[in-house]
Amino acid sequence: MKLIVLDRDGVINQDSEAFVKSVEEWIPIPGSIEAIARLSQAGWTVAVATNQSGLARGLFDLNTLADMHLKMQRLVMEQGGRIDLIVHCPHGPDDGCDCRKPAPGMFRTIAEHFGLEDLHGVPVVGDSHRDLHAGLVLGGTPYLVKTGKGLRTLMNSLPPGTQVFDDLAAVADHLLKTDR
Image: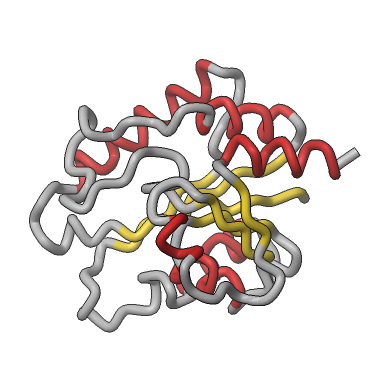
């Protein structure tokens, strides 16, 4: 199985310091939806792992989150692709859960869902250190995109082996080129 794990805010859609709180505020980054569709069409299994502390903060509810994810899935489907799994952490930064990145809980859930013992070699795409570190715990390969918080993340040292790309479309181009 060719599996890829994507962060959501800052990788697939525009991020906001004030949180993405509604379907209207969920705006795809140019090229990201098409990139997911191209990967899916080429046989990649696409999973999304996203921290959503706005739930714990009362900024939006589960129905609104589901609507945002339906919008994302619909846009990908309109391009001929699909997202195979979406997992989210509903907790705040101080809740002490095992699912909020950089903790590896969501990545364990993804591995278990697809019957994998770990994520060795699986591209883990994010725009922050916590995205990259969470995937590393289970052996994922870190891919940093410069969208979202990516440029700020680049100012600090990155985990060994991190590959850096302009955006998700560039990640897809790279994976599809090396996948032959």
